[in-house]
Length: 259
Image: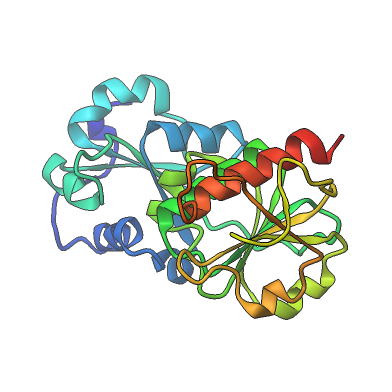
C-alpha cells in the first residue's frame, strides 16, 4: 500500500482534521465524540496488545512509506495528514509520528468485590495517570473517579498512564452514594492519624481513596472509610504528592495485604 492509495488531508479547514485536533487537545472532547486519541508508538502498541482494534490510524504523509510495513493493517482505516498539519494536531512539543483513534470504551458496571482505587477530585492529569499505572501494576483493577476528578481518557492522562488504561475498569462521574455498593473496605491516608502503612494489617481486597492535591479526601468519601493509615516520612516533609502516596499504599497492599 502506498501513500497514493490512502486519503491525504492537506487542508487546515478539513472537518475531520478539526475533529481530530479537538480530540487531541481538548481534555473532554472524547465525551462528546465518543472517541479517544492515542498519540505515539507506546500507547498505540499498548492498545493493540490488549486486543483493541483502532477505528482510525493517523500518520504524517512523509512517515507512511516506512510505517506502512508495520502498521498497514493495524486499524480499520488509515489516514494520512500533510506533515505541517499533523504537527498542529499534537499537544506535544515534539509530536509523535503516529496516532490511533479508538472508540471510547463503555463504562463498566461497578464490581462490588474488586480491589479498587477511588479518585476523589484528583485534578492534575499527571497525578491521575501515574495513579492508574500504580493501580495496574499492583493489581487494583477498578478505578472509580468521583465527580471533579481529571478526565480519565484525556490525552494528558493517557500519556501519563502509559497504557495502564487498557487493563483497568474505569468508572467516571461517580457520586458518593455509588460507594455504598462496594463490598470491600475503603482505606484512606492521613498525615497525622492511623497506624503506619508499613506496619498495618491491610485488608485485601480493599479500595484506596485518594483525594484532591490540596484538600485531600472529602468528607463524603472519608466518612465511609473503614481504616486510616499514614506514611512514615523520616525526612520530615509535610506531605507527599498524591501519586507518590498512592504508589506506596498500593504497593503495601500488593506485598502484605494479600499475605
